Length: 185
Image 1 (cartoon, one colour):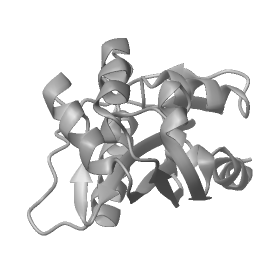
Image 2: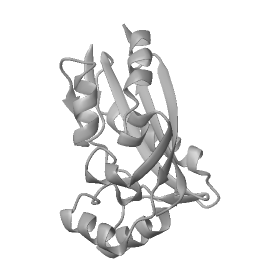
Image 3: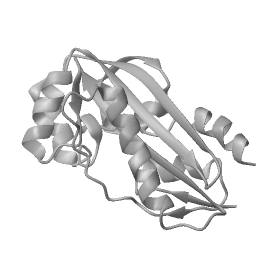
Image 4: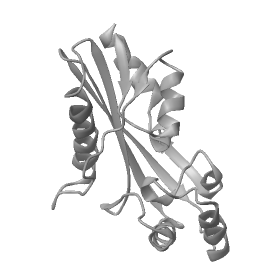
């Protein structure tokens, strides 16, 4: 069976590569605006499902589509990808010294069945100084990352504690995906 990853994330590509020897990458371009009144869990699940549907519509029946989305949430505020450095700085200031939630939804689907995963982790940041935030922003690592940070790189130094699946914070809960893949063999 052909496998297609509906994401251009280098982290997701790397992690899926640990589970599947060959796969194609076909990012799905969708509107990622939350619906009014949509809670974070509903939002991230809808995003993953919409990505899967877009890519699935272009595939043959013998294809497994894997789509994923991650969101950072602070006090019910969905923190998507920052549009610029100023927005990233604002997000990091809000996250400083707090515990926030990270949700990653994954949809695995072929033309016969569908498996859905919702992984969660609570992440506590140390208090961040303006100097730390500015130094991180200067690296550009915040770009295209929910909540303006990538835990697997320099922002890992911001983390005081994690409760939950580390890989859900990275954006691809590898253990849960591995279990779901078994249902497609």
